[in-house]
Amino acid sequence: MKFKAKINVMPRQEILDPQGKAVSLGLKNLGISTIENVRIGKHIHLEVEADSSVKARKQVEIACEKLLANLIMEDYAFEVNMLD
Image (cartoon, rainbow, N blue to C red):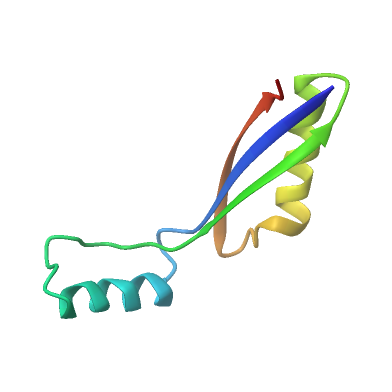
């Protein structure tokens, strides 16, 4: 069976986010002062071949922990759904 995973990787709250800070300052320079606390991360889509949803989730978790996220500086969350 094929599954689709949607993964969000974001800097941890206690870590400074220079990209988010730059975007926040840029928005203020454009006169958009109502937006605050901008954080920039990664959104990853991938397909997984697995026998079950549980196995697909485990494969995605391993990929996140070993490659897709830097666990010292980033948190991740994901969802896995069966492809139609």
